[in-house]
Amino acid sequence: MSLLSWKLHGNGKTILVGEVVSTDERLSWPRTIGVGLQHIAAMFGATFLVPIITGLPPTTTLFFSGIGTLLFLTITKNRVPSYLGSSFAFLAPIAAAVSKGGMSDALGGVVVTGLILALIGLAVRAAGITWINWMLPPIVTGTIVMVIGLNLAGAAKGNFAKGPGIGILTLGSIALVSVISRGFLSRISIFIGLVIGYVVAFFIGDVDTKGIKAAKWIAAPHFSSPTFKLSAIVLFLPVVLVLIAENVGHVKAVSAMTGKNLDDQMGMALFADGVSTTLAGIGGGSGTTTYAENIGVMAATKVYSTAAYWIAGMGAIVLSLSPKFGAVLSATPVGALGGVGVALFGMIGVLGARIWIEGKVDFANSTNLLIAASALIIGISDMSWSRGNYTFNGIINATLVAIIGYRVLTAIAKARKSAR
Image (cartoon, rainbow, N blue to C red):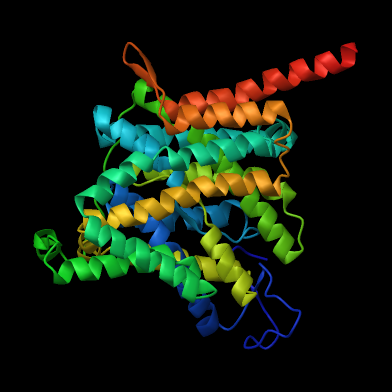
């Protein structure tokens, strides 16, 4: 089968009970386009939150999101259906890098993160994934993810305080939508809450529309160049570990849903996301990752066809060509961002707990308990230390404690057992 050809599933119109549209199949093109548009809607809210929160150009981020998706599909030879959207793991290091040296330094960190991830992908391709499972057991991965989310609590508080009324409205809307709605709408509850907060702020005059009025309807995205400073790059190293966990989890989930063994694609998936993230950083976009929101669309529609993802990737590129569209997003009121931040950053933290639960982490084990407890306090309180131009922030230090501390304490415990 050539890269851009798919077998027609049945009559192309219906999916019988118990059947799924596999990765190498498609429905009729109108139906495939419809599913592709659902994928755009699913990724939209989360993908745009990253540039809105960090100050990156939204249309540039969307452009590289679309390009990255098409690259991912090409590199994995259409075997792994996935949309590559903005990764929330980049929020904290981008904010830290911008505060010290500006956005160009942050983009340098994104580029290096992508390069490291791509190299890890090649290593997994050559040697398998056993060593990653050894380095990142659930206790470590869950702790790092939780730290990355909860470390941003201060940022959420700062934005919320600048517009508490809109912040409360946005947070309340997110909560109501997530409780009342089901399926697809519940998965985009944060985006819907943001829209409600934005619209109300607009009508009460809290939205600055000057940039919207001045923006063109159609133009190429704004591209920026990275600069590379080691002091900024070190801030991004923990993100690599999160991206590994996200990609591995995505491939395993797709494998379970489609009934196909995709272990041989694990390395290429990591490599593809690394290439996409590198390209985004070079051009001024945010780092990418595989999207759980789009897994939800596949689970709901039973359509795992990569053809739908080609439609989504190309659609994202088309949308990125409207600066007016990006200006509307960039004008999001701070209070709405505060409400979103409370929900979003907390959810990221809770995802860490979910990893613990699904991995059946035993907290009766003193090693697990001590590692998680110490890393969380270090990361959430942002315990940092500086040496010259280098600052090792709470996330970095918590990551080091989680990875190195776990291996050292586990090795000591095993040695003590064997000595008995």
